[in-house]
Image (cartoon, rainbow over all chains, first blue to last red; front, top):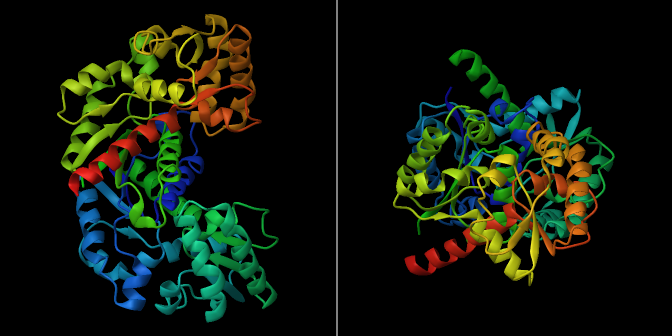
Length: 233
Length: 233
């Protein structure tokens, strides 16, 4: 069977958590039952939000370098545990014959799993993810988002704290924003930046449905791997 | 700079924890400060203990396949977060020009960091790691080990529980064995199988110095990466 390719490093802690979720969510009795995977963790990829919002260096050449590496290693599909990088999904998918598992589709599947199929969801993510409307255009459910002030004061600083290994400090601002979205009528809150579930896991569980996009993408990857195992016989 | 190669999947949860430790132990303010790494996580590698103890399938061809993959991806050094696989260290190092960071050397450095430079250490690991004398021949400190009965009743079943995603259940038997080694006069206990620190982390911290070989190897890898960054300018 072909291995799963993971284009990661954006950030590296989210990639490590993805590998952990990939393992813990797989039905397994021993090493050999687990999903063979290659993680290309290159945190040097230029900042995705800076590229979209402030004319920063284009990450696409770095993303394509990783995809070439995963192709050369013999991978059969690619998962990218970074929501903002999906702003370059079309260019990446056009550049490879391997299927790329879209993180918004994984989030949608997780909402269905939790019984949330209509109404409104709260959407947290980077400013670039929100501005590119990655979820709003693909999810099929109305999204409400934090205002610009909360994005600047709470969400973006918290994402930065996780990337700087200050995970515990990210809990309070992220939990506050999630609770505000809930109070505004969200049936569930999608943690649509892979740093966000790491911060939210650092404190008491939230009292309403949330979508952990790291775990959701891991489940989509496991479904691919189990089908690949069947296919390879 | 060249990327760090991680030959993993043995088991996959230990590899994920290695990637997490690699990230959390790196001084970083943003993604781009972290260590570029490729994790080759192939849990299909035949069981190392079964190969050494019971004439099971030879893992070496699988290990070499991973090393070839990491070489082809442009890695500059290799870390292997599996103690038992170091029973094939000489064959692996002979097959590649890349330096392989030896996990026993990383454990020795961690003992020095904790001020343990003489006396006796307690050694926990797989039966194969203990029988191959990977630590006893290389560490330079007297090692005491659990008896065969405790290995069969406690240590090996606990390692299997971690590989089967039943991490919390592994705590009690592992903590009991570590405490017995301490009672027998160990100044510190080396958790010389990468599943063991995962189980030990699932409960209250032990009351004496332990060496987490996952974190120790991550620190050695970070030291390599920082030197590589300086070298590459």
